[in-house]
Figure 1 (tube, rainbow, N blue to C red):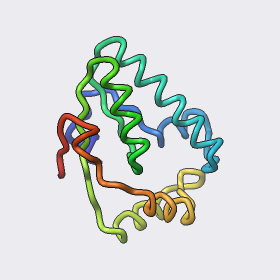
Figure 2 (figure 1 turned 90 degrees about the horizontal axis):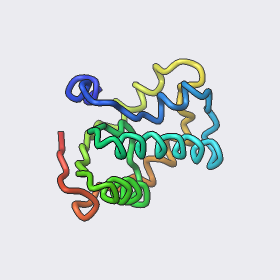
Figure 3 (figure 1 turned 60 degrees about the vertical axis):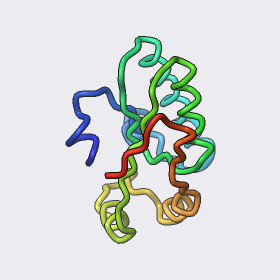
Length: 130
């Protein structure tokens, strides 16, 4: 929601959109790794062209945050994490409204929330809490 309202002028790399585009609704490591690989290639394309962009995704764990940060910094880019926190019930209600394959299974969602780490300033040039 935040990206569509505030950053719609920028290209967006969204794992949800990649899953839809390539019909990858396998939430195992193999499926998630393929989605991440496609996202990383898209980031590299935009970084090579020196174009600003948004990674519209839940950057959950420190490992993923650091990987995005390192990639962007390799190309001389600026990393800004935008943290949009919502109450658990709001997130689960939004997820329950997804249709078919777009619904994230509860066990996947619960696992994601257990892995969530607040982004660290050491991974970014700035962090915005909205």
